[in-house]
Length: 156
Image 1: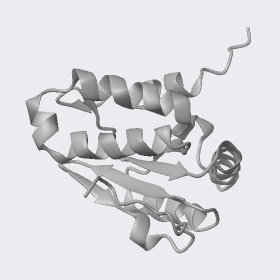
Image 2: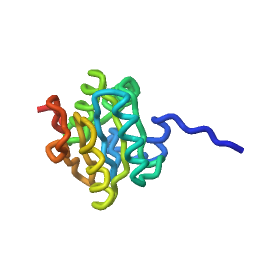
Image 3: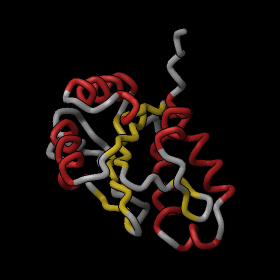
């Protein structure tokens, strides 16, 4: 019996279902924004080729991410609005509406994070954060291949 490959959004949901105050908060995952779909697919392939299990790296097209981020922001509560998760999700929505595709990549340990960061340095990256317990770490300044249009983790 063959099992169909789930859509990217389903892969993301299956990989983690953590939320903070109704807002997407995938603890132990890096969320990366890249300029276009081809770059997203190329990065996903590089990650899988480097040993990351395919189910630990999901691509979300810009339109898909925009829908998910907008829904999260509409359903979030006051805690998420005051905390960093709402602000970070707003930045993701802005970038998705501007055409960025995203990848959600498992990086629960420092070793996994280092492996992912090495691959991120091989493609143009516009946005990158690591969701840790209680903090969202901005990674963009640590990626040599970050584009000139790189964006901070959240709106200023």
